[in-house]
Structures are given as structure tokens and as C-alpha cells.
Length: 169
Image (cartoon, rainbow, N blue to C red; front, side, top):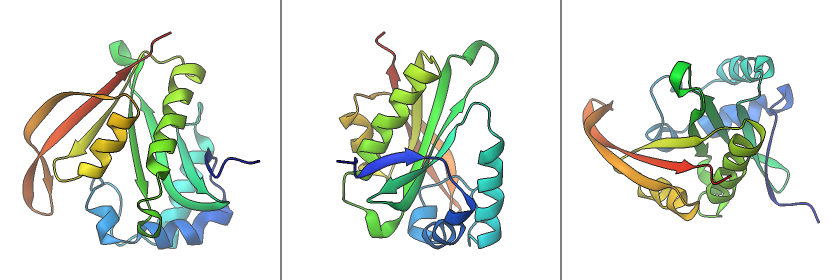
């Protein structure tokens, strides 16, 4: 039986669904401002084209029961941080509460440690995104600190909660 949650490469077939899911203020409120809002089909096409150029692959669609339901990425750091990476992810609102982010984080963490040979993976979470903190903790990530007033989102300052996980090879 095929796993109902997986991560996969994006393709032009995902443009419409990606634009529909990402064009949601409730989703955008938990993302960095570099993600456009509103989010159009042109934005989706641009992002998918970027992912097709990646070597190694760092951004994936999250697939739930054969449908695109979100995005997850792993950003490999540079220089002395080259064995570390930051993960970022979002799930489209219609799919919230199905355990999808928990599984997707497990999959991208496994990919980071086993395929990319990383030593450390981390994530920054906005102080009000408790659900995101919980899914990281379910995956064995530990809180390493709180960066006070580090985030300016919607013209208001928020703390960033930083989580990490080390490769136990």
C-alpha cells in the first residue's frame, strides 16, 4: 500500500493547486514575507521552475492521498555552516489537522541526514504558531532558544522560537 503522505518533486501540473493553497492569508501569516501575498499562478510557476534547477533538490511538494497539499524545503547553509540546514514548510488550510506536517518533517529530516549528509537541521517558528512547534517536537526537535522580537510580521514584532535536531549517525 502506498504511503498516504509523501514528499515529491513539483511539476507544472501543480501550478493551479499550489496557487490556490498558497493564496491564503492564514497560511501566509506563518511564512516569511518573501512568499508573495496574494499568491498567483505566475508565482507558483516561478517557484516550480526554481525547484527544477536545484542541485541537490531542496524544495518539495507535500502529497496527501495523491494531491498536493503543501510545500516543504531544506535550505543548506554555506561556509562553516555547510553541514547545517534550515527547514521550512506549510500545509494548505483544507489539510490542517491530518498529521501531514508531522510526517513531512520526518521525511525531509531523513532526506537531510541520510541523502544530504547533514549534521544539524533547524527551524524557526513564529511565537504564535504553536501547532508548528508541536510537530517539530513530535519529530525529536528540541527548542534551543527564543529570539526576542526578532520577527516583524504584519507590522508587529514577534519572538522566534528556534528548534534543532542533530544527526545521530
